Image (cartoon, rainbow, N blue to C red; front, side):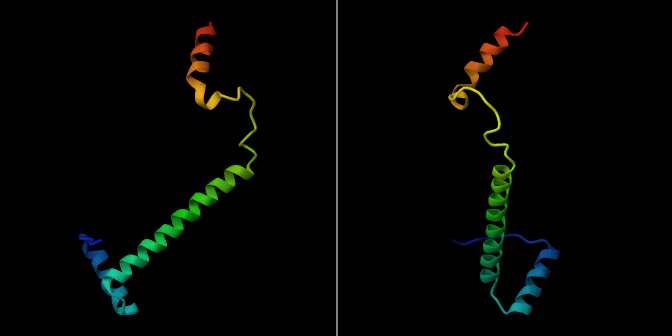
Length: 83
């Protein structure tokens, strides 16, 4: 895939500095930046799921077994019964 990106002056300078410091091509810097962001985002997703599962929130309530698929029916029933 080819990418055409516009950079503001500040980011263009950062890219030039990265190229000078690392002797990497623009393509290689972009690839590494994507890999880094991907790892960070994947780690955040796992952290959030782990925190939710360890919080004892999942499975803490009781209700009908089909609540996830029939929530609208239950909501309408409860609203009709409300005074």
